[in-house]
Structures are given as structure tokens and as C-alpha cells.
Image (cartoon, rainbow, N blue to C red):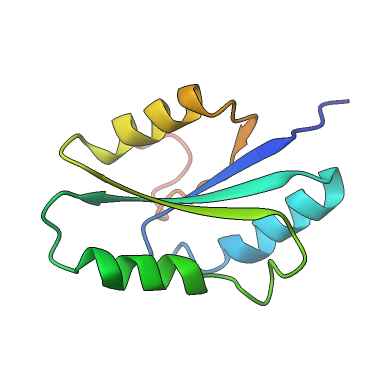
Length: 108
């Protein structure tokens, strides 16, 4: 049976991100996995990096209590998808949990 040790939850803080804290918590508890919550921001975002850091630090605090959670903020001039892929390759990620923004599983 597949048992992921390292889960990645990329977040954009849209309305589709909020329910993912419950899903990520269930996966992490079920498999005894470590969870990394990743937010990729542009180098010159409309919202300050401090504000984004605060959002990241406060995301899912109740649902994720008691779990091994790392929260990572990456600022980049690359596109978000490339930054996520780079993170996955550099950090031995076993499973990515990601919202589809409501477009359906294959549209983007």
C-alpha cells in the first residue's frame, strides 16, 4: 500500500483553499505523514510578504493541531507551477494535495 511520508499542500488563499486544511489533516493523520504548506508569491506582490506570511502561519491552525507541519513561503519571479515543481523535486515530496479552482480535473 502507498504510504506517503511527505505531503505538500500548495495554497493560493483563494476560496478553494480553505477546505483543504481538513483534507490535508486527514491524510497526514491517516498516514502519519509530515505536511508542508507552501505558498508561492510573486517577487513584487500586491499584498506584502509579511501579510502573506501571517496568512500562511494562521492557515488551518485548529485542523492541523498536533501534526508535523512546516509552512514555507517562496517568493519568485517564475510562474507558480514551476516554483511548486521545483519545490517538489528539491524536497522529496510523495503526494501533492491541491485544489482545482473549480475548473474540473483536466482543464488547467
